[in-house]
Image (cartoon, rainbow over the protein chains, first blue to last red):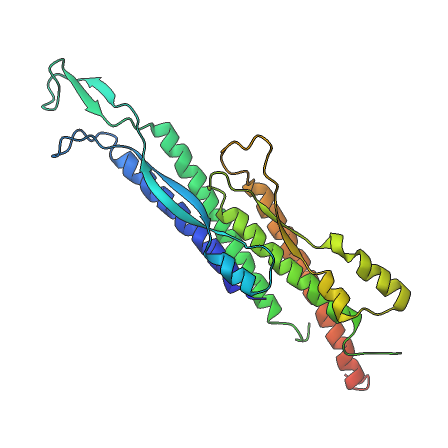
Length: 145
Length: 130
């Protein structure tokens, strides 16, 4: 049995979760960004993942009836959240009523996404370490144990 | 003692090792897709297919290659839910990690069995010295 596919599956999961953490960091970094030079407000982003189909062919080649998918990033979408309006007449970005528009980023949601992604990443690391242990054990077949 | 290098133990243990290895990949795949919306987890069925193998072993005391091939592990995907709503993925990561460690221990137990089988052969080759 080939262990490289187990490593590939776990690695693909880690790649996706790491991107999720990165995107969350971008969102949190822009909590207090006002309109940019192009006059557009930053829109919060989120990662949408899907099963990667790349493994299907490999697994079928190895004689398994079904394919074992890894994960892959489908897209990084911007969320259409209404802007957060803050009363701050002294701000140069304020409109005629004295409101400044900030991106509609929900910090609580972002933190939940962050923690979920970190835990999922850890689970992938565990799966990969177990695969490594098993591969090393398999190399000891026929040894004096 | 009628002893055959290609014994039932070797065949059955390699079959079970393949199944455990495949199960590891299936669980890894579920964990990797923990954040995939609408993902349906995969599972490996193996123990269910061993009935014919057990029957042959108890009646004839040996198994042949075709029987072993018929009882190899299969990957199955969890069926689509009737509602068919596009919800978040249904992977319970804690459950998957628990299965992962159970499977790892099982795999190592199988390897131990295989090693014992080879050491019995080795005793036979070395005329029981050692």
